[in-house]
Image (cartoon, rainbow, N blue to C red):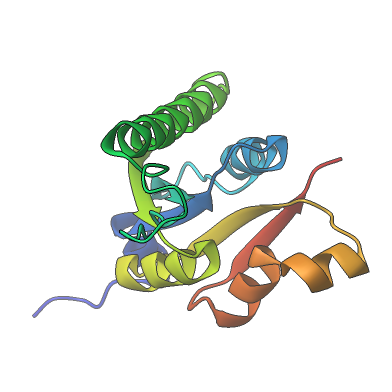
Length: 168
C-alpha cells in the first residue's frame, strides 16, 4: 500500500506552466523579466510559454478599389513583414530571459493569430496554464474605453490567475 503524497511532493512533481503574453512593447518585455525574477521557484519544474498573437490576415476581395491593391506581391510582402515581426519579438524575449541569472527554465514559443484577448484566453485554457503574466500599457480611461484593454479582458475571462505587471 502506498502512502499519499504530501502537497509539497505533488507540487515538486507537477510542472508549473506560466504563459507570458509578449508583443513589440517594452511593457511586455518588462513583464517577462519580472516573471522570471519573481515567479520562478527552485522547488518546482517551471515552463514559461511565450505567447505572441499576430493580427488575423486581412480578407481580400476581388472587388477592391483599384483591382491591384492586394496583388500577390503585396500580400507576400505583408506576410513576410508579419513573420519578421514575430521572429524579432521572440528573439527579444529570448534575449530578455537569457540575460537573467536564474534557474533552469524550459521555454516554449506559441504564435497565435486573431483577436489578442480571445487568443490569449483560449491558449491559457487549452494549456491549462497555472498563471498568465501580461504587461500593462497604462492607458488612461478614454484610450482604454476606445481601444479596449486586452489585460482587463483577460483578467476577467482567463481560466487561471492573471498577473498584470506595470512598467515603472
